[in-house]
Length: 637
Image (cartoon, rainbow, N blue to C red; front, side, top):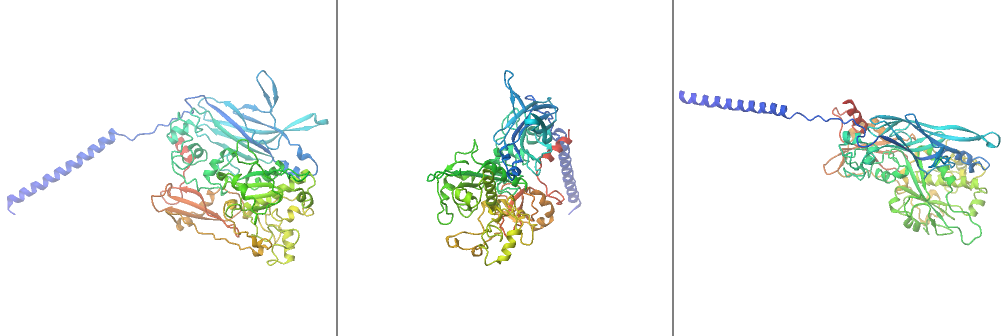
């Protein structure tokens, strides 16, 4: 290359460098100019409470229940027929609504007290005007009991029986204090020492969708003038208001068809369906539909084939002591057409193995939409058993109370004791639906007549020890033996000896909706429990599009126990974390499953929680939290 060519080449290179440099300067300048011209939008927090309507608070008393009937039923006499007289007082920021005395138009006054053991179906409410812009209100709900004393009961004392102190937040629409979301006895539910209370609190809301103005504009970005609380923007089958109330994200798809954080066998979509009837996704619920039978037309005397209200109350009370809420539909006023309380045709004797007469009622009187949510109980003439009317699920119970059995086999001669024996039988059969199934333990369903069920497994002497030490309502000796602890009505805690069995650590509420581990067929009618073929397949679950992550499961084992809200029965749980393997699956990227160790009873894996990602350091699981989002916004004020 000659000298002229070299100079030309150098000039060309310098020109290219200058052009490139100018280009970078231009781009950088314009980016800076763009940043200056288009600053990042800063969201302005709207801290108003309710600019479109007056500010007020409504306190609903949904139900009150006196817990005193159980002990009275076990006490000689007729005092069980005399429920207490009680009422409620609501205090909001010092303004008091006393329901003991009420006044109608024209100044006519009367009593607002209740004189029943349970006020189910007798809802009440009190409204309060609060100052506009007020952020919180102090709420106190008190149950007062009127106790008669003095000569002929002319004097009375008003005694406080339950007091619930709360702080209601107008910004997020939630309350805290003596009751709060995910507490031990349920949101809007307080189990006191002597009374049980269900309540709800809500504020004035322009669009009537239950979600407060502040939460709509600052957290969800929805229109506070449009009633969209019943909408389902994320398409997961649950409306926004329910997800808001229970702390789920209404804008992100959740697998509510499978989520069951309280492991009661009632998944979230079903919990939503039962909202009107006190369901709570974080507190175990047991629903029972109870149907009855017509009286025997072939005899002059017969007993009513119903489940007495007092027997229901005893069952409700006993299970409440173990953190389980039981609800009987024996004819709810607004229940489905074929709901509880139906009187079925009279059938003298029901054979669940060969005849299977009960299948007709299971098909035609037990609504399909209730199967998998309710247990189906029937009071009939002669039966007395738990059975499977479809597949092999133990969700159908036949109680009986023919005069022959009531008077000559159960020795229940008085109305009080008839109700007690009925409660014992109901708790026994209900125990089968909660995991304490026949043939699972040598004491379950033991007959007083002798070692009839387990002749090949235990000796007669051992059987006698079991009968004494297995102190449980699941042992027939503690139901029908009038000479053995007549007033005993409970499950066993396993502390009564070497031959005892701990029912409480083997409760598994979803038992009623899964195939039983035994199958009763005609050939075992006259056999023993020794002849049963016990089957626990316990299949390992396969979730398409998901993969078990054993490392994450091990890493977060301790943290996972705080994600379930089932009964506190000291059961050991196994946990698994699954991660999404493809984008076809909807929802979040991590799922947490739990399974209780209730062997020999079978159990299944239940989805208890979902999350999207680990935190940036990978040290903890990050779950959606309405409260966390709320607190973060408050920090910016």
